Length: 115
Length: 110
Image (cartoon, rainbow over all chains, first blue to last red; front, side):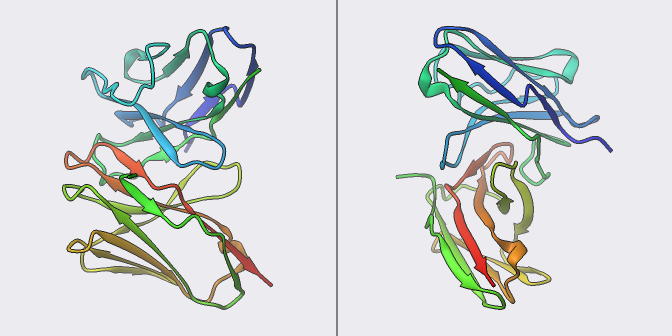
């Protein structure tokens, strides 16, 4: 079946602009996660959605970052007034349920470059 | 101190060698542990879960030592295709969030 998809695959934007990154999870997966991976670094948790519950936003680095998940499926991560330090690969993952015992399947990521 | 720590490497080994990676975690309440593999410029993929009793999957063996709070991954008979970054991962006590280590890079040479 189809895996997690993300778009765009690459995004170059000027400092100060807003960007939207999209994630389509695997059908039937109730949990959705956003991570950020800077060059040569590990994955940094950003936000987690589980079903209709309020999202866990504890990983968002600043109030310029926000995310939505509409209809329990597609999610959009928005970064307002982008800064150069926002440059990273943004990875989305989904799993069957919000439990670590379920494998998280990752999408290919969006490589964001802020110039 | 990072919650999950790994030696970044790289570990350079010849084909056929046995190589072991260790990882330490600081949150004693962590419930589950995993090894993920990440190829260059690709997304992470689950390699194996780590159970308290230790578990083996072909050439790969994972061990968990809760008393010392470390996890290990042993790869036997290394293949060129094993070259990748190996990510040590813990989940929180609710089991709904993963914390990734920085990864250990393995390079298997002919």
